[in-house]
Length: 369
Image 1 (tube, rainbow, N blue to C red):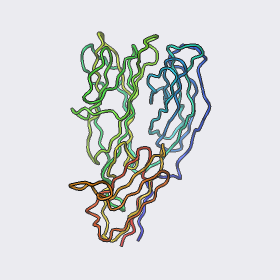
Image 2 (spheres, rainbow, N blue to C red):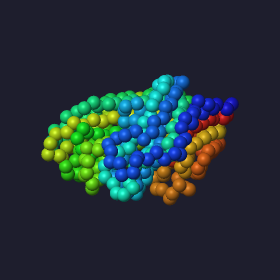
Image 3 (spheres, rainbow, N blue to C red):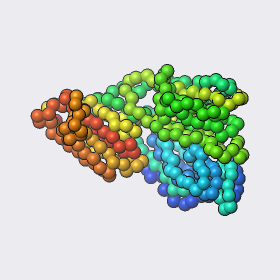
């Protein structure tokens, strides 16, 4: 008997915006945050929203950012010279109509210089077992030469739901953070073990009392300090696989090495879903079905089309590489379909290891024998 669950509900997905137009500021126009373009989306039900854009600087220094309504979602961080990067973030939104603004700032430039937003993509997804949190610290005073806790929130991951193939083992947690203050470009996301930058606001992520490193980050400052009140807002992202039914204490602190107090603020978006593949390899499910059955897994691109890897087995006491650690492997881009029949290999003796950030698990099934 084949038991299957499609945890990615593709029938409800929407490709809301795909705009390749370049929206650039007037050349040599020095400005703080201004709208380059806005996009309005309407959701008939709650969905996971993906926002991506290309941030471009031409002969100058500046940045771009995206806001949902008036709330910052993510910033490009400081850009200089002739540079461009892709910035992306997820958010979970209830049914309704929303305005997503793409803004730019340009605080110093040369002849013909500008800042631009291009290649805007907005998509909507629906997954089983999806949860989310949004946090806004509000304005917090960060005294000079002190470390201040700006955000301190507890959240509990969902329970380990029973599936046809077993139970959920790990929940992917994605955290997107906008770090800002009211005075100047001085926001520095710092990793565990790094020294503070002098005369800066050094932002650190903790789980309880233990500092963790950001998966990705970008300062809002660089060598140029002209119009230093423009373009305030750093970017940070964190990705990990966490245990089910567990309370976690998310803490964000700032170490102020400036010789004056600052008013600071954190906006954080937390997405929790076991089917989104995280930054590092993880084990999404504990397999539990009768011996002799055939298991099926389908991996698909989500926001990217990365190389996705599936490995059945486990790293041995002495490892000689994947070919001797794992009974079956699959690797590739696009839609990846894998199956394995547990004849001599015992189900309870194996782990299902998956990697490929930017992809997702879409289908889990077992043909029970």
